Image 1 (cartoon, rainbow, N blue to C red):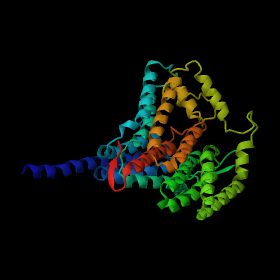
Image 2 (image 1 turned 30 degrees about the vertical axis):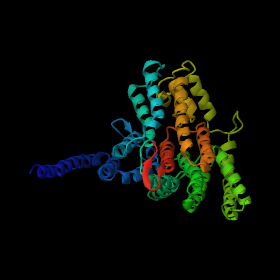
Image 3 (image 1 turned 180 degrees about the horizontal axis):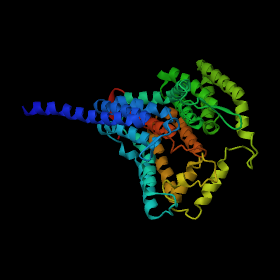
Image 4 (image 1 turned 60 degrees about the vertical axis):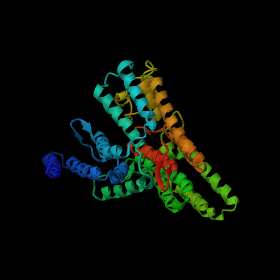
Length: 446
């Protein structure tokens, strides 16, 4: 009788809980209908995640294809929509973490952010507009993606994640078209220079980040997983077209090393007798030539329309970098406090420079030499751990991928933008799992 009563009560408790939340969501719908709709979606996904955590990981990863903070400009209780989004995906993935476990040896970046938090409260020269709540919010937002790096997914699940990452730019473009047709968000962005940039369901730089990852990961996966090479070659072509359409220069420069090695590797294998490689080689060259022809006018407008001291228009980056470096020059060891960079712009810079678009300067501003060196050293340790276990045939590709990350970090917010850091960490985790598990047995190298 006792067992029966327990089984009867449990569904009742769940039902009452869900009913209560549903009533709250219904009331909220009167005041914030869009946020209420999002809340209901999270609630339904959370119910599903309790029963089948693996399935929920797919929509969570797919959601990174959309820059929700640009499409929805509301806030709840003082929290921006991007903070609510991060909180939501963390809640959804908690059951995955509990069921699969975490690989704690990859927690070095989280430890580095904990050091930054310690420096902030005990050693930093606090910026006047920095608050404790802002510091804590920055800490949570910056550490969140690195939990996704540690989840021990099943091998098959990790493989699907990798394929989804390569599809994220296309998902963004498709969603952007739907939003444009519904008059909810503009598919294109026309700059003051006259340059037209595709932005999909993001802003152009965020869509470019997704495309950068889709291209570089696709190149690696054609070598690591030849059985799925056709899929990756197709995504490579579409992602490259999307990247060029965004008119973004940073990721193109960041991937030059990998692209150069890719062509060298293809030509070398072709000379050795793999004649079939002439097809992707010629198609790649044709695609690049066509892209240069189509986007030449856009690129020249963005690079040379304005006269600058550097000769090339860097969209205000040089002025921003000088401003932020000057703001921390009296606090070089411990910085101005974690999150201080987000309130440092006093109006002297263009409002788009909430952060300096340079991750080295950003974390130097927040945590000085001590914190920024610890962070990038911790990342390097994780990258080397993964390098040691991946197949030798992709080691050079992986090295150029990581080099591209470090180069990209000079011109954009790679560690603090959802559209880059979450898929990036997710892929590194998937690559590690694919390299250390037996295809026939789920035996992971610890």
